[in-house]
Image (cartoon, rainbow, N blue to C red; front, side, top):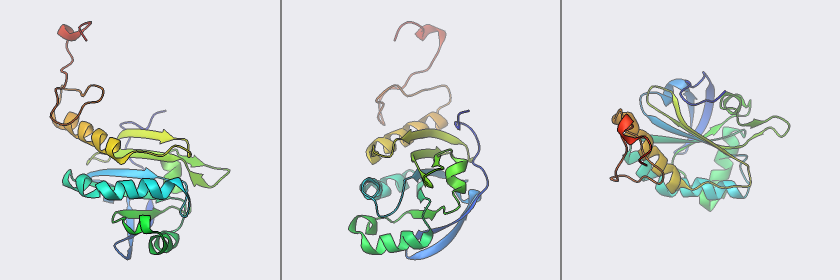
Length: 187
């Protein structure tokens, strides 16, 4: 069953953000757009490149009212240690969420049980707490933050313009489509 349009499940977690440990629940994901980005583990190879890429575009996500949460099955203590030792992770200003019980990874269906780590999963949650975008990669395939930003803009556009949809490669300001009987067979 797809997670699209499902509501996020209850959870409690601790994250490392801005030099502090903070507590999070599903309530923190409501009232704003949230991008939850699962990655396999701290102190790995592809993960810091992805998290740094997101960090570089974090101000752009914030302008759109989107909060980012990086999540792995490591503890919040490991996140702090990684932040203190990695030049790439030092750039991260969004929350790095510890999920040592794998509750979040299970809730979002990205847990690799036998390895105790998550797949690379990206989930966009609307202000009502519904998952609007879900993309899961094999752990050897890194993501592109600029493409995630484009998808966020498309999801926000569709949410604020009922009856319109964004075609492939749509970028902000470009034409959208209004599905109707008149369009059938003309695209």
